[in-house]
Length: 507
Image (cartoon, rainbow, N blue to C red; front, side):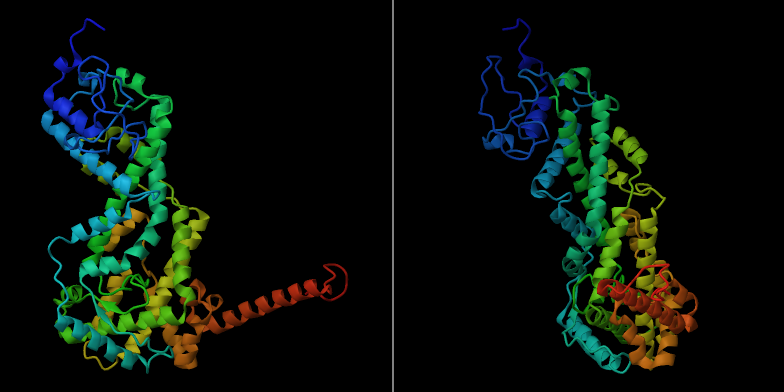
């Protein structure tokens, strides 16, 4: 046994308490005898080494452990500032919360339950429940909207009861769709965090640990800590996603307000936000509610009667997200400067500048597809509602206000776009509305709506530029498709001799 003073005599009580709470009974040999107070516990989530940093509280009597450090480890070897009892207590609470979230997320990159809780927390106390009177007003407005739409579109009514949602209920009903939209981005962010930490540990640079502690790390520490940071990055990014969803919940009017059926195949309105939207417009509340009910009912008819449309949009978003590149310089710079006592710095990392500005060709194609499809959806809704609500006294004012709002987006929508690197915005909404109006005038309501029967019939940017040429371009595309089909049939039937044979089979 060494003649040096007992290690426990050199520990500050607050430091020892901090280390016990954070890592469990990790420092074994408390008496200098080499005997541990409690057996090792290898269960539970680990920080990538061994032991149980997210394990039982020290007062519970449950075993813990962190054998990565030897018995008698002196906390004075920790970096400067760790002797501040208040700071250590704060760090202990934050790290334990992080580990708890990591334990509950399973194999997912993001703890989605934590993300949902963050979205609800962002609402604060400003979220009144929908009253029975408001619920009836919503249902009445949607029923009347369905009747009016019967004359403005060939798509049949859904025959569903309308719902009035509070902001929290909107989050609950749309959350699965948000998870589907943001998960590819969250996975990219988590991988970037792990990659940065792995490089720092393997290169021996940017690690704010004393040499004594570096020597105590196990051989595979780089990979283990990188995996931990990947999960921690996913937890922090998920919290940011939740915050953005919560802010959006304070602005949306319905379940499909951003152009996607986020709440599923149901018609839903958010009365609290609709009242806020109507303030300052000098339009009767009933008229505002009916106008927004018309838009929600029309949009949901479209997604139900064109079932391919929802998957097409979600797939385009996934294709765009798959090509997102993280700004590694920003992650490396931020990771090397993060103060462990300030969790806001981890959240600030996932802000403006996180994504590379340049897009891949595949991303450009996906973005064009998203923006064009959203413009076609919103343009069709605008044309249908303009016909169905023609006798609303303030239709012109409401229509202009809504089109301007959809084209530019609100503050919360902009914040969400910065977070996930994608704007769900119909930039050419007015051009799309003009195209649908032209098709209605040329082919009638049924002819206009027939365009949604198949994805191959969808208008493209050229049609938005020149609505009058839609039919001629469509005929050319159809003729080209038939030509390819004919040649393929000849090939399969054995009657295609190939080029240069003089058979005349090839055009």
